[in-house]
Image (tube, rainbow over all chains, first blue to last red; front, side, top):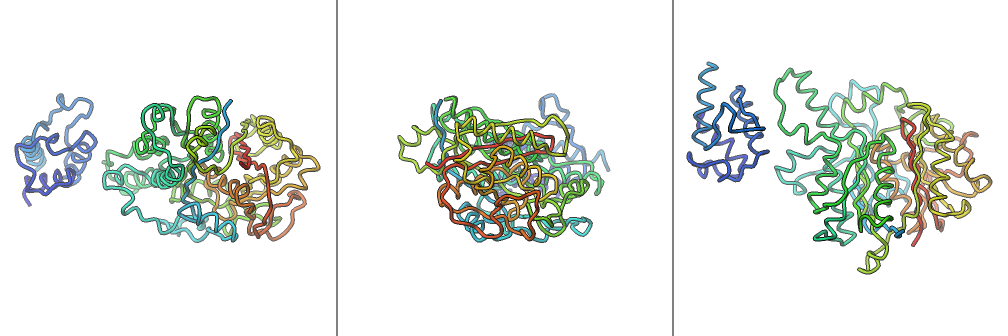
Length: 85
Length: 402
């Protein structure tokens, strides 16, 4: 499974949706994922890829990690995984 | 001052997953204590407990709730749903704004602590699930009850070890009595039957390896239990106006502190709490028919408790009945007073006194009528529920038949 598909699967599970319903331009808000759901998704992503996501729940906009859409999250994860390799 | 009545009750414990099953087990003198089924039980010296068995969360909680609820919160919600349903109350508007929830627990989310300590210390993991803190915090259960039933008034958690539930219910009682709240959801819960929870108790060397035999000369310690008891305390006129079924009236309480020792109980401290509850309720000593004892099955508690009862009641101590239902459901620590209040309600409503089971041999230091081994039919008007915690913190409630 590609990084993209894996991230989409995690987000879909959190949102209780089918992966096909998670589009690249969806925001987490669109998908009904609240702040607790967001930190749970990031935990699941960290576990799945064995990476550390620089996300600060106190001020998400200040984090060095863009969560504004599904595509930006996937791009961020791909970068982190590449850096780790 | 307002009168305070109980209009709803709920429980889950080793004797049953609801009030009816629990009271039936108490009537039959059934023992809910058995071999513990927990991880690494072979490394424990104490391998018995009053464990809740056959508890299926499927259908009770959704996936997001399961991610957020420790076992002690799950127990609390199961009991609270029963209690609120029986009361028939719904909380909205002014009623919601003024009603709250006060619960007791000693350990809070011990299962969550145990699992995550295991994960970071034993398995060497460096990342924990983000909900560890909201799951383990002592007030998690009270908060989730407030959310489920829309209780927006005074809500908090009391932690006074083995007296937590009685202190919590005393607070709820006081709030309804003084007119601060029309109704309060109250009681307590505990879920400490995990490796770390039992191991910690082992250290004190007060645990029995075979059975809880309160007041019996051959008693050899306490046995831990788990579960929850939750009640709806409601202002009497409010309950009557809506035609609610009244289970019992709460008529008084007292709290005292031994101010002497962190583990050894004090006769004076216990006696002051018992006498204080009678004074608060304006009850004559001779009117008390039954006491649900703290009765842990330790050498120290049982003789101290009997001496305190003898001191407070004088000659009437020989006429009243006193039993410890911990012999059946184990010691639920912070939830124990709540489950034991059910035995008090059964005594008042059904005229059935729950027995002290496992009683083998009379102890001259516990020479009271402990209702040995078999339940007894008796009409009683007033009952007390004792709780004497480690740390010397005592809370006694007085209930009356309505």
